[in-house]
Length: 448
Ligand code: SF4
Image (cartoon, rainbow, N blue to C red; front, side, top):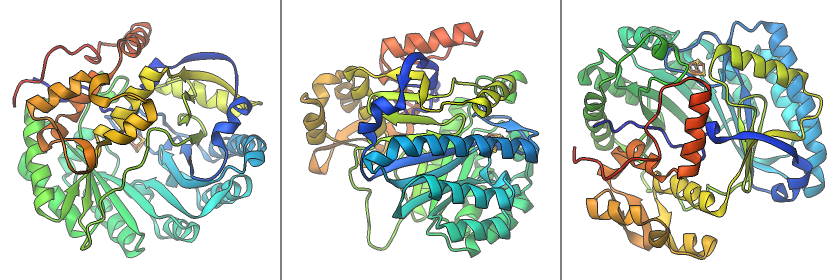
């Protein structure tokens, strides 16, 4: 069997979004009032396209292209300020992702922070997160991040093995990654996260463990371990790469137990956090419901049951077209593409956003939110408990077991509703893509 069906980091998938007529952000400003909101800025430029990537990113942009993008982003911030100011919206979380944000010049990076602070209200002590890549990590840019107060810097290393990086078509070499990592650690950001990939054709478990051991020796606070997917629209799909999911699953088991035995707590199938002396387990937070605004092209916003973004684009041509549309947009408060979630879909989202991450779902809070019981709404989870994939622990939390967590990408997709799965299939049909196997899985996973 294939335990790697789909990564469920949010719900519903963007392929379930559709054009929305006559929706304006002003009409939903009330849902964004007050403190504690999340802000995401998407910088969609990359040096080269990694073989496995179908994220919203473009390559080959020059200085002027990036300036035009920042000009549009500034217009969007100005218009959003008018919507947000009357309700005193402020942000406690601020993430800059991409793409490769540090591909911006130092001046552009300064400008990005300047305009964010000018137009939007970041709270004191706002948790600032930024993504980077080895080739774009240098002293000057890190100084800018430090001065801006970045709390978490995440670097995509993927492997310390040259052949594996070549297979992934990842544009840095291991020595460059080591130099960038030395430099990054010397800045002593509160949290450094390093991303790695397993399941790469030709990658032995020994090689994976060597990469992780080397990564851990730098002392990062977090390591994310991603299974390789051949995603729609990605270069590896066009080149016909074939994966070996059962081998990947074996690698996952070895690598996760290595990290757990060497000072890391496992929070989800992908997230490993360095254990501290005083164990500060993640507190319960209703992460499925906090309002989150994404600015720029490619990020998505969650405003109550209204989710929206620019139309989903995975090919270079489509990304370029959306980028141009974004740069030419006059009124950013008009929401043209997204979805309104029904209560059933909100429940599914809540479960997906909590169950796949420790500490799991607090069943009492679920009942308070929805006035119904978790296990009555989701008999499937009761079945998982019988199978040993989920269990109820302290404080009435329902969480995946270690076995269940390793199967997150198989169990999670079973929580997709038929309606959303239908929309996703429809999107694939329209775009002439192969079927993904989500939403309609029958029966239980075989024991591995
Ligand atoms: S994986 Fe990251 S660095 Fe690579 S192309 Fe995609 S967005 Fe760019």
